[in-house]
Length: 119
Image 1 (cartoon, rainbow, N blue to C red):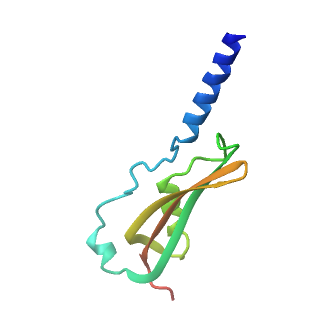
Image 2 (image 1 turned 90 degrees about the vertical axis):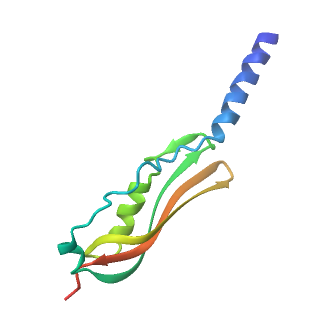
């Protein structure tokens, strides 16, 4: 009986410690650090953009869907305005919110899009 109690305590301790784990894939979010001057000289400011990558965890432990990542959030932001080539003044933030029986983690990207002038 004591062994069963220790096993339950161990499973509970591991589960609680896993709830605090951050499984976000911030990774290396700089896709390129140099832009050819011939390309950037012709770019115009298109406007502010926002993108995010989120994942829900069922019962706070079991992930549903793809993991969150900065590169996904950046690509989402770049797709907001058609013709976007680069994003400048980028800020990346992450959040973790809890609901009853689930948690949601998101990486949010904001910036200013530059690209080809719309005709």
